[in-house]
Image (cartoon, rainbow, N blue to C red; front, side, top):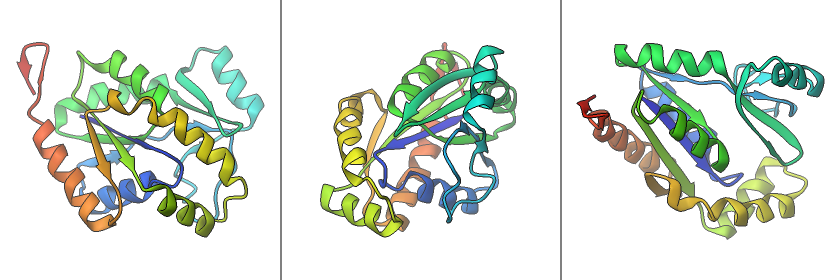
Length: 191
């Protein structure tokens, strides 16, 4: 199964993913490529960090399945990573990935008849979002808030919308959703 977690900048996507990874040995993080710099609190394994030239070369070589520009940086998923999701799905291994709203559409479309895909959109009240972005040291909060309006326009594409106020409660809710969606039927076959 592939678990896609999306939401506005500061909604807690990476925090919830880290909690899921700590608590569940059968969940593996599906890394994306990005041209943005590593944030101080991130592990070097959070992304495959590439220069803009390296990213462009992978695009030219048709190595990237989907990509999106977000906040003047590029993010993309390697085709080889997507193949891993399909290959390991049979072993009761799950992958979790943070994804933009457009990436969610592309991934669901590409995988809908191959593996279970659970897509979750995390929401946070605007005031809390601003607080989190400020604590994180974001310099251009207005840019992130303007992107929020765009992202909210895609919220109905997701299987579930989860309000993320409390990390523990949100993580438990996501774990329950994963267990429920594990037995979803794909192409007439119960998975």
